[in-house]
Length: 168
Image (cartoon, helix red, strand yellow):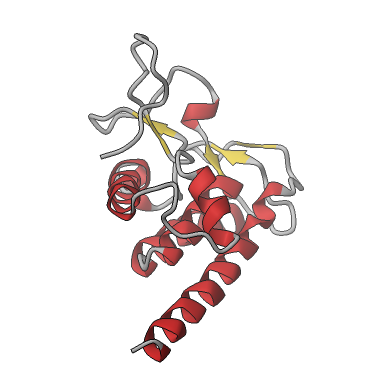
């Protein structure tokens, strides 16, 4: 269903991390497909992240929280696991788009966008991280520029769809 957080025997070794497909994301954005990751596994991981890290966290209204337990509880082993990172959420959304999970992608992005700009009032001060009560840190952070990966993913998906039509 997903990749474990690590291979240790710790109590949090099987936490579900929202950025576990970051390597795949980078590869897909550069034109690779499934040379290193099986499509079925990628889809399973994205489904798990969406169901657990997005929808079971604040009812899907804030984006993708970094860490959740497999039972759907917030992972509290570290501050980072309790946070929603804007850059990771937008990167995850662009991965979902490249895998034709548009509904899930835009619902995930809507959560972080709405939280940053409409609830926390952080226009032009996009933070690195937020918590469930809209506390934030590192305003003006640059990693949220990964929102542009959503545009790249849309362009790539259209290109792939057109090449599939032309190859028939």
